[in-house]
Structure formats: C-alpha cells, structure tokens
Amino acid sequence: MFGGVVEVPETERGAVVVEPDRARAVATAVSLAHPGDCVLVAGKGHELGQYVRDEIRPFDDRAVLRDAITRSGPTNDAEGFRPGDAKE
Image (cartoon, rainbow, N blue to C red; front, side, top):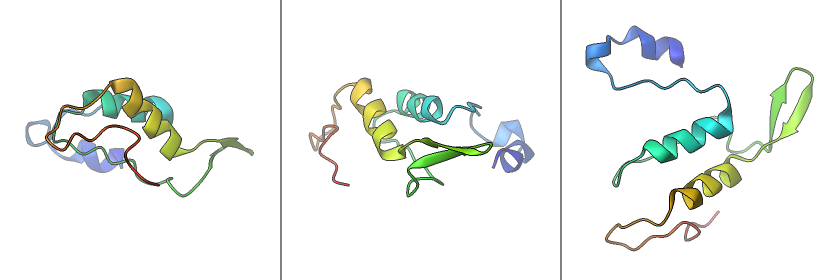
C-alpha cells in the first residue's frame, strides 16, 4: 500500500503516517480522526493473530480498535453514539 501512496505527488495527497506497529497504527488513526471521519482498519479483521516470522501472536483488530475508541473519549455527535454501542 505504501508504494502506491508515495507515487501520488505530495501536493495531491494528505499527510502520510508510517507506523509499523499495528496496534499503535490503529490508535494513531483514531486519535487523528475528527468528527465525521471514518477510520478503516482493513486487511486482518477476520484473523485473531499476527504472523511474525515463524510464530502467530494473538491480536484482534476489533479489540484494539474498541480500546482505541474508548481511550479517545466520548463522542459529541448528534446521534449520541458512544463506544460500546457497536455490535460485532
């Protein structure tokens, strides 16, 4: 993905943040989001682990995203949505 991003001229794209740690990347995306933004966590949602070299480390995108949203604090949107209202 990163290769495709860097091919777009800087004047035609938004800021790019490179964070190799997946949990930190999710938390960073949530912390940078503004009301009305959508944070998309793609590519591993159905898997419950990360493959690192020859081992599988437990990792759940849903839990990491839920934690990042909870840590970001309550929302102030018109619907009154709060983290934890989402259903899996």
